[in-house]
Amino acid sequence: MQQVSSSWVTRALDKVERVGNKLPDPAIIFFICLVVIWVCSAIFSQMTFDALDPRTGEAIEVKNLLTGAAIADFLSRMVSIFTGFAPLGVVLVAMLGVGVAEHSGFISAGLKRMLDSTPKTLLTPMVVLIAIVSHTATDAGYVLVIPLAGVIFYAMGRHPLAGIAAAFAGVSGGFCANFIPSAIDPLLQSFTQAAAQIIDPDIQINPLNNWFFNSASTLLIVGIGWYITDKVVEPRLQNVEVDGDPNEIPRFDELSVKQTKALRVASLVMLLGIITLVLVLIPETSPMRDVDGQLTTFSAPIMQSIVPLIFLLFLLPGVVYGFMSGTYTSTKDMIDSMTKAMQGMSYYIVMAFFCALFIDAFGKSNLGALMAINGAEFLKGMALPPMITIVGIILLTAFVNLFVGSSSAKWALLGPIFVPMLMQLGISPDLTQAAYRLGDSSSNIITPLMPYFPLVVVYCQRYVKSTGIGTLLSLMLPFSITILIAWTIFLLIYWALGIPLGIQSSYVYPAG
Image 1 (tube, rainbow, N blue to C red):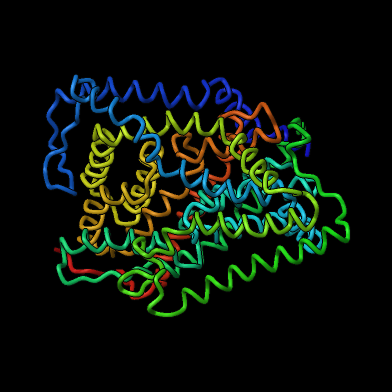
Image 2: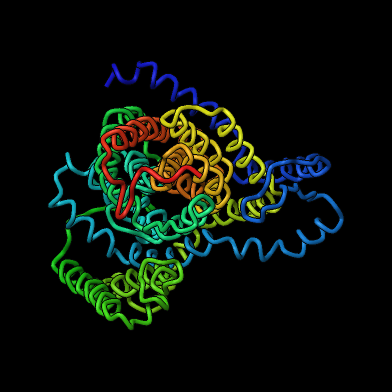
């Protein structure tokens, strides 16, 4: 422990934490960034750029956000910008159901049973693995897996911030590592195919063109998450006191006979809910499928219903457990649980307000598009060897991801540049897409501008009140750097061995 605490790595991370925690509150950072975007948009709107927007085929034009018309438009849309901020609805609706399950005691009781049968040595890899699998349910990992990881670690006598960091690394840092196909696969494939058809109009890209690589990457990310959590992050936290409100930190007393019975019935209710959902999804004519009978596309109702399903699958067993265990004596107790859950989200709501305004302004100004396209064109102009170019794409994507959070939005910009360019070097669109997804995932966990980053800070503050941006950055930086390096090497080895990246994927396409 002492050797780790005095290493240069820990000293560097301590420095990151000290500097980071001197930054203003996240809400103020978003406001400052908003003002910077306004000013930069006014300056760069006076300039002419040669970069072409691949989505429109026209030259990028930075829009001045400080004109009278732009300010009037901003003020008229301010409320809708905030209420239309996607992460806000996801978090609040899910937390209503999870809040009932938590405050009724259902989650605590269930975790107690899980902990009794889970070896302490395997806790970290299980948390990381579950976090990775949660990608299948889009943003569920952020509102469900990450906070539960803190609860589980705390109950096992380990530092809760280590559990939160491990889950965050799995949910966000390993975003493209999953052996279960998800909605992001066909979404990115659609952009990749359109870009590839610039060179080869007849080319068809399978939505699971990266599935083999993503599945294999799951083991890599679990291993990295396990090592960094137990050997780097948790030793750094050994002297960090858990000083959160004891009444807000879940307790794990022995279950009474009444609570045990309530847990069984409530768990059965949840299981029946899941079985019912599966039975509804099986028929090809299921109303939860899209018009083509698919389940994993973004247009499929099931993919648009993940958050409401989380709400119901936690609300119903939470209510059953509450009344059977005696925690609830009236429906008012259930509403009080929801109210407490929303009180815990008040800080996040404030940050989300400023975050929504910043993201909207950044996208509307076209500054993000200009940055991404110029970076890609610079990389193209260097004419590096294919392997070096792949590494360059990974690094460029990771850098752009610090400013432009949406994975699909970035690929819509970068795909039409990267894919045709590399096809002419004999590199398939499948490999280019894999490189993009790798760079996008590995830097998710170190950008405070990611919409869910402030939420993870809130989760940490539940246990350690002094947690700030710097604290979380210092915890996540070892994950990000290690994932980026190891995953890049893994992709290059994978490529060198000629292993298929996914279904119907290959490496060589005609040079246009």
